[in-house]
Length: 362
Image (cartoon, rainbow, N blue to C red; front, side):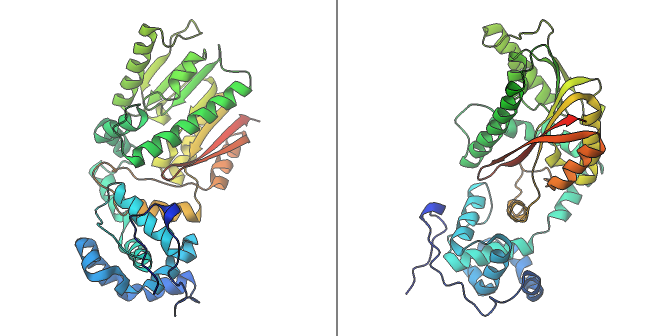
């Protein structure tokens, strides 16, 4: 008899030995989803009482049908699904699972069906007065600041998930700096870091001699960047090659003004839907005289499913909405603004994925 897989094992140790042929194996994703409609009442009950997932046995909801849903979307084996459930729980989820392979797939699929992230997003925006940008501002000025200050910092008291995000973001920053260095550097050139966060890109740009304007929608974030630079300048750890001091401003993206040789905007568009992002890209392009470097979370089937999994367990510290953007949409917005994409990079870790575009004015 096959041994059940435990979701507590790392992905590398899991082997998909659970048979995947079921009476539902020939269903398309649409057909499988249709057959799930009658399960919604039961799903809602499980959502209200997470402990019931373990006691009642998620496999009773139809491991075969669940496997069809997940496999059709992700190409995932029960082993992968088990590990995904584990990773989500480790990230702060409220679902206490220790399920075998088929049951893990069932749990994952039922959770995807049961959740309604759109309602949560609408509630968050309503709380912020119906303003998407204000919701982001409030988050990064309150609990979001502490969370991301910790992630972007260098202390060891972070979770596995936070450390993974930190490493992914650092990799994206390193790629931006390599792009800039490979094209003659930034010394003596004007540069705008929009959405500077806690300065992970701003500080290296100043050190390279950029005449920098750093801005962020969050006062707390901008102040942290400014204080970080001041501390490093006092200790001599970093000194601007330019005689002009950097400027730090608390402004939303569309309030930033001026003209700059290079404009950078990392990990900002993820907080806004595509229609809003289009206007932001247009505004960023208007600031740039030569080069625009931006990152976004790419919209693919796999990442869409993984994002939905993350929405199962928002937690108190995950209050912002996350939006994925199709590469074609971002590139089209850049073209409309008179820019041509010249370089593309991708950073993908377990919990951080970011597409990086460098574009030049045509």
